[in-house]
Length: 101
Image (spheres, rainbow, N blue to C red):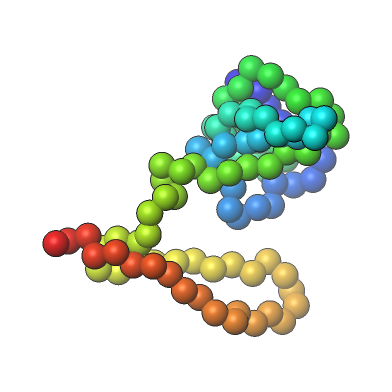
């Protein structure tokens, strides 16, 4: 288990526990491991290797939890805009699968 200390706050609403962290090195991308804990300035990852400073890191959603469309009779969504400026939402769409038959 390693801790990735970041120079900026972790301010990505999409990052969740279980997402897979990758890093870039010498124009190649390598898997680091799944996210265990997210703090305001660090991410704890289940990995044994610690990439060096100034390494580009990225994440991919966990495919087991995020591979299907919505199921059931209804769903709830929370949208968040963290800016203080006026913003407009152009469109929202989704795929829905009937799961009760």
